[in-house]
Image (cartoon, rainbow, N blue to C red):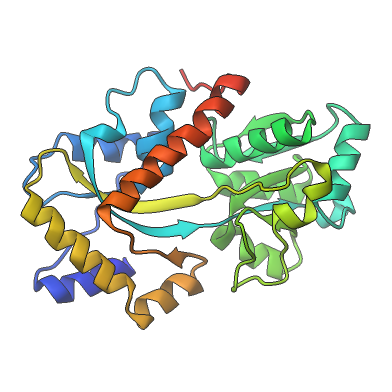
Length: 279
């Protein structure tokens, strides 16, 4: 919505944000795929909507190639959190505890096939531990059960978990970015605090970008690409994003397309190895 305000001023035309919740972003993506490719209907989505969902469900009738990338808007770090009652200080301590107690621990997520679920599966695979996955209908209920002790750990988007971390209701073990996050500089990366447990080089995250239906005129795409990048390079928009736990990117269309391909290459082996399917 911060981007919408800036772009509306640039374009001289009001942009309307229409939320289409449901099915892990599938409903919104399908609506845009079916829209006329005239530049009046665009999709804000990335990892789940156009990269991961098709990998975990054979019933989805679209792929990222049904859209034309305009640009990556922002990246969203994930954070590995647990209850302070767990008593572990960092990721290495938790991994050692999990290895010593196979099958004892569980991790929550916002649903099967989401980036939060697959981030946990990647930790299990790289660290060589077993945890039971408990899927929820959204990260909010999962966080509540984590704080209540029904599950032991979970990945969440940093913006939604940060208030509970600051309030002392959650213990942050690590963020999933390559480097520490300016808004939470005291939280180490998984690379730092999980390196002794096989997590050296671990890096995942969420991303949101702008896409258009395939067939949208090139001149329309170029106009949106230019305006999105300009908006995201203004200090006020970058500050608003940072305050909400997001890292403003403003990539080119080509860079966004390469990002989507890299996400598919990253998650396809994890999905095959774990059998994560929503069908």
